[in-house]
Amino acid sequence: MYLTQIQYNIIGRVINTIETGSPEGDYGAISIYADGPHDIRQITYGRAQTTEYGNLRKLVQMYAAAGGLYSAQLAGYAPYVGSKALTDDMAFRGLLRDAGRKDPVMRAVQDRFFAETYFDPAMRWADDNGFIKALSALVIYDSFIHSGGILWLLRHRFTESPPASGGREEVWIDEYVRARHDWLSNHARPVVRKSKYRTEGLMAQIEAGNWDLFTEPIRMNGTDVFSG
Image (cartoon, rainbow, N blue to C red; front, side, top):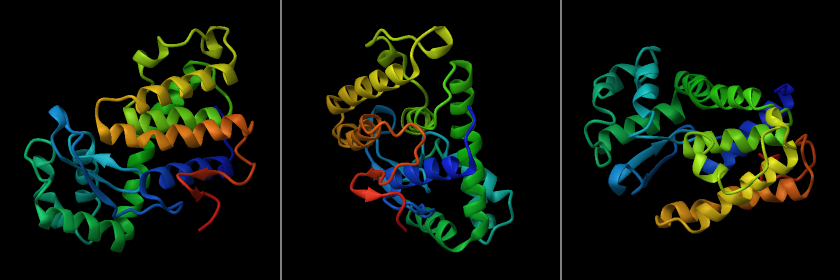
């Protein structure tokens, strides 16, 4: 997978828009959803939204070690993220919000965190399976951000093989996104059903043939990712 810097930046802006509504990314964005283990409420945080019971502890630990404005205060929370419910801890939420919006160190840490934790593994999967197009990179990265990877339960819903196994890249991506859209649209959790705007936006780019991601506009949930 080779991406130009422009394509890499566009992919980042698309994911930022999907997650926080802003192409530039809202590094202090906090949402609370009942989508944690056993449907418990949890914090989602940052420009690409990592979760309290997912990788938020890793992000807080990275920031605590980076010497930012709020590192000392957040360091005390780091051991408890994901093991002790902090959803209603307003002091913790305030520190996260302030760090994301006021401290350039947190913004730099988030950029590195989301690359190391989600983007790099997504591109390794793309390489291993023979994908080369920028829109494919976006689809795969979005699946890693939103679902933790390429879901096997969805791969069993269509027959096309990945390019590394002789399949056609555009067909595989189209069929995967459509299978994912159907899964999101009919999910048991209402909060997951609401996220089908992700796949709606991706299907629009596939239908437009925007495989290099250079064709404007690219809209996600009503927002043009080239604006701002």
